[in-house]
Length: 119
Length: 115
Image (cartoon, rainbow over all chains, first blue to last red; front, side, top):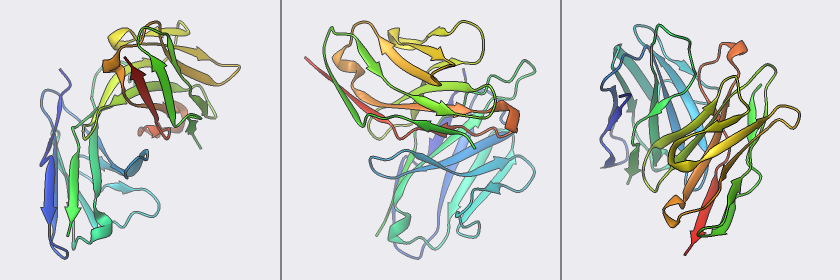
């Protein structure tokens, strides 16, 4: 259980276009999902917290108009990189927090990541 | 604010030898602590966590970690390393008292196990 699917795993696009990345919790409900960005040989930086049915909460320094997040259902969050530029090239990883009636244990379940290359 | 430090960029160990990957943390309250492993171009896989209870936590693939409150550490250990353990390891923390649900990650430590 607790599988998170992320799609696409790899995408190449031209500068100025928009790219959508999907994150799905396959066998559990996730009111809250998180989007991280990972630069080569670096750690994961939290970009935003995606909340089902409400606006995402962005970390300081992350442009909300550039990185659009939609959490339309309890199992799906999408990240759209708008007007992509080469500096947006990165590895984007989503994670989901499992909604459970029992005590919140805090662990997150991660997707496989999406590597974006903007030409 | 919560933070995690992994002081070693890389750890090299011979197969069959014990391994330790270091992690220290900083939170205002009682921490939730986690270890994840990442293979190239993949997401993160959960290894183990400390929430409460025994300071020694056992996880997947023979890994364990010891929570030391006085030293604010949560070092990852394995008695006998395998070549297949070679990967990038991340320590993460969450302070439940802040209401912040996201995890804060350390910078990662690359483990290289030599045959």
